[in-house]
Image (cartoon, rainbow, N blue to C red; front, side):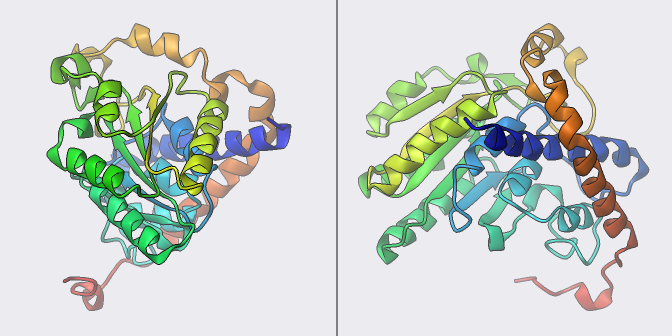
Length: 308
C-alpha cells in the first residue's frame, strides 16, 4: 500500500475518533440532543470498507452511525449541527445521532432498530440490478443482527437474485451486554454457506489497510457479477454500548482484553503519522462545533415539516 493511501485512511479514522472524543466532552453539557452510540475502537471498519467504494455506491448503517457517515464523506459541520439539534443539521436537527444520513455521498440512512437497514440495502441492490447500473450496496450491522429473522430473509433474497451487495458484520463480540457465546449456537461460516454467499473474515479489526484490501477484493468480485458477499471484521468498542462512558466495571467484559487489543491501534501507536495529520483534524472539528453552536434552533415553522 502506498504511503499516501495509508495516510488518507489514517486521517479518516482519526477524524472519527477525535470527533467522538469531542462528543464525549460535550455530552455532559446537554448540547447534544440525543443518545449516542460511539464507534471509538471500531473506526477502521468504516474507513477500510468505505474507502473501497465509489461515491455513487450506497451504504446502509446502524445506530452506531457517526463513523459510517464520516467515512463515506458526510459533512462534519452538518453532523455536529444535527447532534446539537440545530436547523442546519443534515436532517434539520430531527434525526439526531442514531439516524444520520447523507444521500448525496451515498450514506442512505441508519436506524436504531437492529437489522432494519439490511432489507433496505437488499432492496437498493435489487433496484440497481434491475436498472443495470454499476452501483454497489453495503449493509453494515453488528453481530446481534444475525439473530433477527429479517437478516435471513435478506440473505436468501440477495443470493437467490445474485444481487450487487456486500454484507458487513462489525463483530465487537457483544449485543449490548450479551456475549456472542450466550446468544448464538450456530457457526456463521456454515450459515453463509447455506445461502451460497462467499465469506471473508478480518481478525485484525484495528487494521484499516487489511480491511480495505479485503473489501477491495470483494467489491471487484461483486462488480464482475459475482453476486452477494459477506465480510466480517472482528473489532472492539472502547465505550459503553450507549453513552459516552466506559462500562468495564459492569462485569460483562474485560478491560484487560481491551488493553491487549489497543496496543495494535495505529491511531495510538503511529506517532509519526499522528503528528502529521492531527492538527488539521482538530481544526476541522473545532470549526464544525463553532458552526453548530452558531446555528439557529428549529422554530414553529419546522415543527411539522418532513413528517409523513
